Image (cartoon, rainbow, N blue to C red; front, side, top):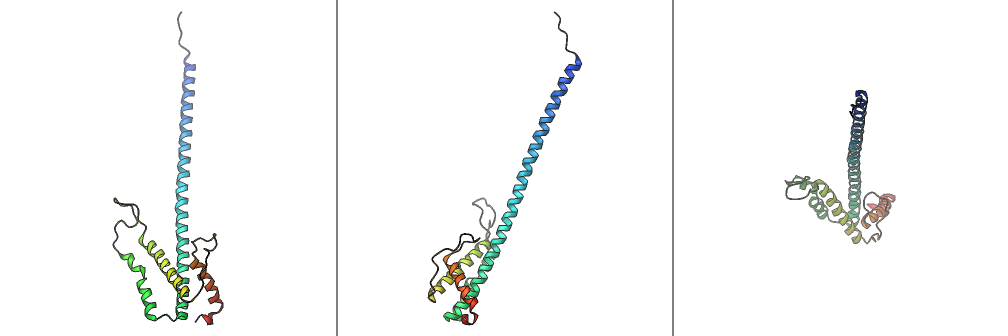
Length: 182
């Protein structure tokens, strides 16, 4: 029995169908990869923008808190009749901006010998905040102001210490009666 080869037309149509199937699977895979890459790209952009907005919001909140602390410390220092020597020395010793000029190596980037360090100006900002908060707490004790025992509401953006809650309570009193605050 002699086998005849299949007609060329049938063979060509099977090859063409196989090529079309391979092409469609390749295009589908390429489209899926492009879609997944776009999702990763958009997610990274959103993360960067959210991080930037959060850092800006924290910066503004810390600056507002520092300004309020300074204002209240000045009013309470006048009430407590704190000597000018102490007041001026406090600001000179707690001027943390001068530490930003220190030549720290590997500042803000991952070095070969250690993890990524926070940028120094962020550290000094929060250190200044904690020093002023400590001074306010000491001033509250000196003037006999009972500190708050709670940490405030949980809906706030920045953490609320008992000193901050007491600060807000005193701020309301000082704002209500500006004549008595001098």
